[in-house]
Length: 442
Image (tube, rainbow, N blue to C red; front, side, top):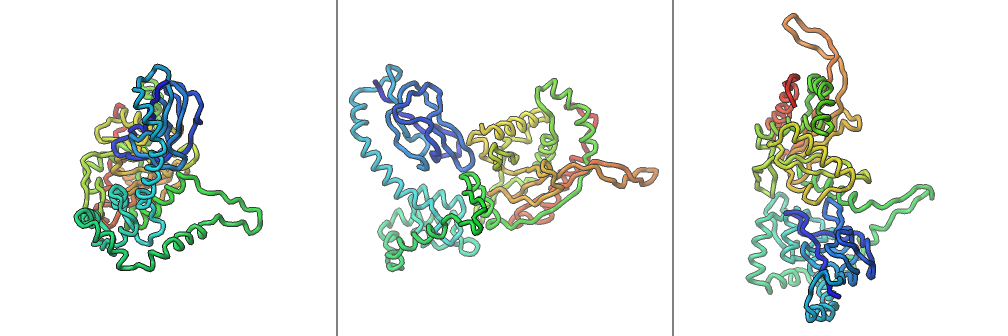
């Protein structure tokens, strides 16, 4: 018998860790090659980890809710002749299991502490949190850093400067919080037990109300939405668009499109095409914010809000959307939408977005005020297409006719996007839609 190390696979360039949510196999279970062994979750996507070999699951190194780094060994599988492992290595591995477990526990104590910001009243950006985690900076240390950002917030430069000082003077860095406030540190355990009591499940007063805890994804979405509102100064612009030509063209070509391409033609790729063009015209909308710095994005990666099987929301990303023709856009939209509904999205499918579009019209909404997907600076909501009476201007005069119209709702970050840019961008999207060529080929 030989032992195979089951490692957490790489899930995308920007994904460094995942949380174990469920073990599909128990110790002693037989596993076939490519069979799923456990379920994991990143900050947005749930997925399965398959085994590369056939064998018996002999040891599990992490439990449910543990955070595992990419490339880290999470279990051992005993194989028969499929994988060659030297005997000394096998013995050493078995002998060091307890040492590994102790290292894991130590790592949890030293690494997980910086990630838990629930006990702090201060706001820290995701970037600052990630740096704190990577450098092993505790929450107590982080709160001693003097922020130079707005309202005293700690910026990227602040924490990087602290890391340099901390590395050259470790004793001073660790002693400073003790000298400043020794008594609060002594009472810290008592303070930490209070939030737990406050977070106790509510009790139904009449005994008839059902109380259900949020699932993991809903808790994450809740956190993202609150963080976005606290971070960005949201402002909205609305514009009504005549999409009669688009509706007529789609009705005319949708059957031929599906027959030739094997894909359904919805309105979404048509709108995405117009948004991508407008972003090329107004690159100031294709940016992100990091503290007091603006990052101008080279690629145009469009996020499209989609529903998950459990009803939660996710935003897969169409990479380099401006380089796709309408057929390519339709295939990308359908692929991401179908995989989102089936719960088959990969972690990398949700990374790298530079601007987001959400279709609130799917649920009959005329318009909406969507919340910005951080750290982006804008999001466009597509309202429902409706038949409405409208004034039609002609050389012979004006008359009333029935037209297909919809509202575009543009939310943007007023910290870096003023009304002129935010309004001009959504107007450009409307211009592209209203100038749609009804005789174009697909």
